[in-house]
Image (cartoon, rainbow, N blue to C red; front, side):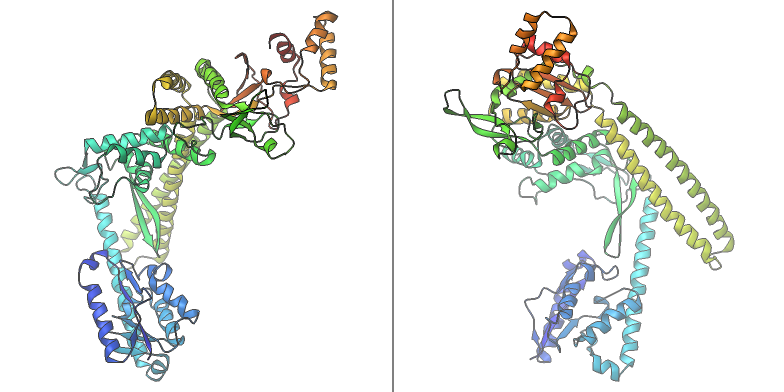
Length: 597
């Protein structure tokens, strides 16, 4: 018994609520029963709400999958493909639609159109070519109808776009808004706007989508939709990515099954925040994806995840669970140590108890003057200036292309629609494409300016935030403590690029000690006994008492923090390759270390 496959398609999702599916299924079942065919029930051959005009049903739909099975000979020769009409298969241009039609027939598949009971097979169509002419006419008419419908839809949307000041494009809007009375504008739903603001603030503070969702579900924050089953990561991320929060509507264009940006309407929605504020959150999220998010655990065990580097070899510093005491025993306590050394890769394995390390870094963060350290990054400012120049150049080019298009439009109107030279029409289309590209470039450069401006960290704000969070650190517990530590971690990562740790301090070889002695002698500032005393204080083996760390800021400035809490105000950027002998080669530092530590 030959096998039959029923292909059901419609382009509008609204048709799903009607009888389109029921009708097409019924026709397939009746035809199969009447002609002794086995109707397949396993292969999903439904393209619901998918267009055949833009080839979506071929590129990503069930028909495309069926054709691949035919090519792979996994559909038996002599099988039947049942469709309500040929326009269910394709509404593409005639030659392209005909190619699909004939390829199916050449593969030995019989096509049946159920609405008129026409049967198309390779042999029958060869013998009766008149049926092929009929099919071409049907395909041509389907393409023309779809093209006309598409043109009408585009014209209707263009008319709506031009009439925005008098009427909304559509009543659809984000869940935190509702249509205002009349035909123009939208208004806030205040309680939902507060939730959106809270989502953005939590994200800016370093709280991830999963934690936001868990917090909202635990607190019972009211949902925006009754259909939703609790707060979901996907919706929180959708809100964080939405340009509607700063008032923009982004229109998209679907062509050949591909969705591309078409136009941007600024100030279409009432804005919850500025684009600069939105971009600040977006950049913070992007930074967390690049460097990794905050650590896990009930109280965020590592405030500095992603920042810690070994000062000796440049490798990452990882956390461990047990720290070795001086009596060779172990106690359960978090520590950091070089990952390379742990794996035997040419570095010394020296533990630094995490609680002690955290106290030292936070003490530094509380005391340091971030505003003085960070200042203004001149390189970033130069990039901003260059970007602003690019924006002005693009604006001028947009004016030039718009002027050329207006001249062509005047020429077109004088020639009359029926006598319009094709050259003018082609040039206008090329100019429209050029304008779309220029506007897209302008938006990208404007976004880059916002990103660069936001990278100029407001140091005073960050310092006040860090100090405030540190003051509250000892007063909280549970989930409140966890969220506070996340905020503190994010604030630190916005000003600090990395922390190079030296858990064994600085130790010297015999040659380095001798070089140090020669430096002191040549300085002519010390007698022999003083020089020998200073040299005797230099460590020739790792010494945890003299451990130190180097904090490198976002602008390249760095500070060395000694175990005593003393901070060396070093202005020279640290070397790209972390060579410990280069870090402490200056005579001034050697003298300071010998005298003060």
